[in-house]
Length: 237
Length: 292
Image (tube, rainbow over all chains, first blue to last red):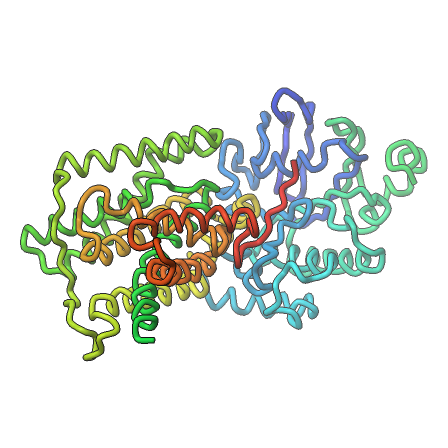
């Protein structure tokens, strides 16, 4: 298996405050990897550092190419789609416009049209609401839209920041089922940050646990889920 | 009744110009959250360029198109040179930048073309429009060109990818970057378009107010009034506001005793203040709630 994303000794800063203290991890092509940890552990910062949305040092390599010092918008063009915390939905635009924006860096118009249809097949509720303003969707629908918008890039890697946040348990189940399907069928590698560790470990094949800006545990998701000691001390369930 | 209709139609004609200026102001406001006090001077300078081209023998419509293109490039240049470096600066620094730009453009125009009032041609003529005494052909032309511009802009923003990208960059810059939009260039493009729209307003109003470096001062204040009335966050509102202000200005000048021509400008200022007090978001604007 080849390494798609390789992060070495990542340190990130908000002004004078250091949020990440030399974090290293890697993600294999085609895998679904999860970063777990409590509030404030540095999960979101890690994703933001990959897309250069926060000042950081250390090496970030994607498919063997360094990402450091590139602008956020040019990192997207490598095929990295980031669904940020709060989903980043363009709430005053229609559902369909949101999907078109996901593909704004692509030039293949026929591909874009067929991909929009594909998204409607993945998420039928979006088709029903395609002319509606995105801000009028429910939280779950907006999260579906955010994932669909990210997929419109035809990404090689999708970064998801707490997709379960604020959603009803049934909706979360549904969303994670779709994420698993996208990972297997569309061969999109996924890095998902979650507080809902139990659910994330069911879905992922690889897991890392972050505490105060450092990786404290890594391994096969099943092993971590089955290790009671780790679960109790780091994941709290 | 004929006086009333006449005043309303004349109001719509000048309102078209205010609508253009308001639209230019709103475009830049959407992109960088600041009011461009130099919008009128930029338009005035563009108008002088078109006048100079015509002095050199270029026909009207060719000069019109060349000026449009030069203004577009000039707007982008102003953003790249002056306002891109100020992007993260405090509000007052930006205000100082706009005032500096205002003074520089105003005095450069005076230096190059001096401050004497110049005649500016109209391509439409000034005969009665379709034989009617209500409106002149130039006024009809002002309305016509503005409507064409508005329809063009509507299609650009609604149906082209670059228009969509510009809207996305203005509404949520961070999300826009995350889908790969170069938001910095979208801002520059907004400046270019605002400058071009302003130049159209300048070239259309110049036959009415005559060409001189201070010609756009009053016009821009009406443009601001229009933008505030319609709502600074709404391009559609700015356009509606422009027409309303134009009509209101003319009717007030005609029917309110003592207003006349001299007190028309204070009326625009009074309108700005009333809207800000009564309905700060304007007629079509969204209330902006910011987390602090």
